Image (cartoon, rainbow, N blue to C red; front, side, top):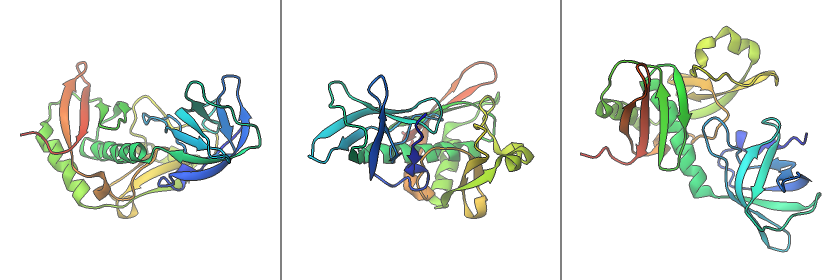
Length: 244
């Protein structure tokens, strides 16, 4: 298995980087020694963009996914793209406007779990709309939730990551908000995404990319709350003002 250094974990704002081709898999997927491309995981879509060769030609990337494990990151070219050589050095360019919207949306999803502190049963991050499903039976007003979300956004709380060991997570099971999915184990450490000074607002395991402060999220609202079963509610987060 070819492991890739995930540069996005330390710097989610890194829109360009350099990488060396470490392998080409049997489907034409490109594996690099390091990358700023995020691979689909945790409800957040993988990055798209292009790889630039030394002669200036481009290899369009249609998706980024994990291989046998999260340590293996595969850049999937669009159809009819050139195949680079193993050992070739490339300049990596993600579609930054798309990534930044996903970062803002993913951070908004974390704020929603603060406003609605119920077990999470599903989530999906999108460029224009995201959804989070909660194990909850009571009804709640979307205008009230939207107002509470914007209070957190306008509070301009810092967002940062820190690492803990697996033993610390075991000692603090409340950090895991997902009802059905547990953080991957085996590496010896877990990445937490924290919001607020000293994580006063929130702290939960997450490998995704986020903005550095809540004000960057911008104006958001709950566009819809759907009942999905007797004890499940689906919240849809959208950019912009709540329509009057």
